[in-house]
Image (cartoon, rainbow, N blue to C red; front, side, top):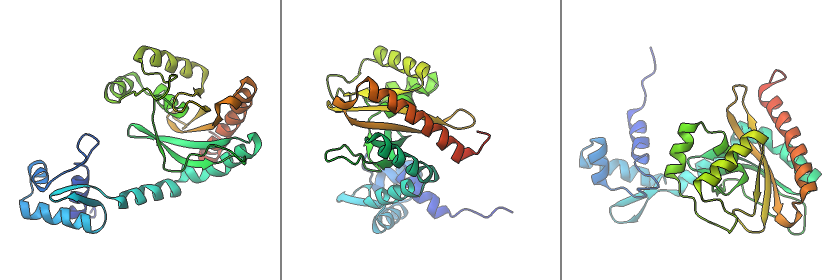
Length: 254
């Protein structure tokens, strides 16, 4: 016989899931209306979630997600098996190429850094673990978009804002789709000052045995250094890393 679930814990997560980008704050009335709880029970749940840091009360009667969840999310990234496999490999790349390296996943509509290795330079670019980046203006993001099936990509492009961050940012849907088709064909992605004017990057995908994209890895740094020679060396080193990561995750038969 299966062990019964803890209903209160499940209900707590249902309450947290009522908060979204479109609705960053909830009230007791919203919990009552959408989850069918009575007012006293809804209020008790909200107070309990606030007491453990899962919610905060920015103004009387309203609740938003608390910083405890940020801490837990950070721990997920730090203890994730993929991140632990990837980190020593990207550290080796950073040492070989002398540019910063990061690994990332798509979480919701943002790219989230799960592992990072900074270049050993007096002046270098470094993206911290847990940082959230845009999809349409990053080498990582464009790889994830390129690997979506047509239905998911259509939905994503309809629902996510494509703000222009520099003059190089691709915001036009037809131009972006053309770029994604090129990425699918060539197997890598670049960023030429699309998110920040002076930053460039080259990224490759790492896929599972079934062909699903599980993580992306990039070499990035000052755009002025990303000439054809560096891009070629970066691609070669990243392709090697992709094979090594796949082998460590899935074994010799991968």
